[in-house]
Image (cartoon, rainbow, N blue to C red; front, side, top):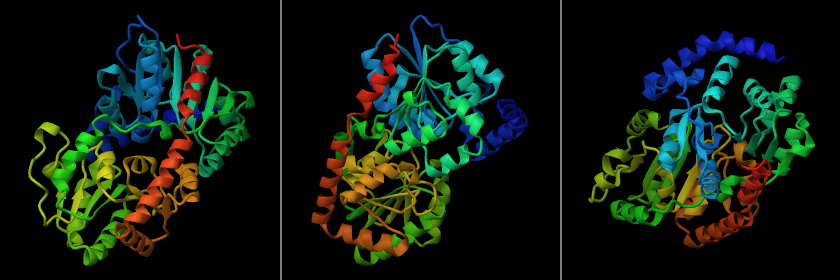
Length: 432
């Protein structure tokens, strides 16, 4: 089965290059560092042991942050390499860790790419975040006796059904893993149902509960309040996808009838879509500005003037701002949930002190949403009317927002501890 899988990958290689080139029209960074996709990276002189952490994109990189920081603190002699598959993931690594961590793209799962890459970096151990199963990579790691850990591992019901179509390939891939640190008991049972050895699967909890607010959070929040304080109330639509922006703008129009000065921060999941979202705002008759034009993300370039009163929507077109906007706003709608995209992480908003509203398509964060919803810390809605009514209610009821935030903070506090358990699992095979 592995041979058939590899044969199909070789056949798809021209399409993979074409896809990179095509995506490069919208996001030129996809055309950069393309040789890394084939395993060509600068050889690393392993004067110190190297640990390789793979985090596919922005969400996984953020989830890895507490683990990476802990490894660097506990083992200062380590070299740490992070791989991603997207330019936004790579940019997030650079922003969070600077020169403390090296970064490149994950090579495609072709035998020659994997062997070339591993021979160049020579890792002592490998940590893969969430749901990334690469048969050729995992098999090559096992052949080289390199410990491999799946950390913050999760399997949605849809992923489980998909993997069950290739039982022998998936079972053989999972047999190469040294340890699996599952987010929930359900995830642990799903990995075992796919054939992962029971003695290698452990429920440890979710690293997303371990992420801390940035050190500059309060400073940035003070600056944003000076910038946008004249606009009240404020709400955020974060990590939105195509089809959701139209709904959000329709809701905002309804809110403006009650709150004429209401300001919406509209944050598309992929910043390269910002121009399209601005056009949607204009077509909806909304006065709109780009975040980079009126606030920027470079503190030295930030304008001291407040945002103009006439702006009804600010489209956020830069990475790394959402956590601060959650701190600024009263209410947040978490995107990827009205359309079936699996939802996005609501914990950042809770941690920043923002009340959360979500659609019902949250399979990728089902356990988190279940816990929040069970204590009344999040409101899940089905459609535009539900979103409009809920946002309007929350904006007008400070006590209701306070109760939801208190409940959310209790969920955060009650789920900490995953980081210590992950470190214990990894260091069982002692970090060199």
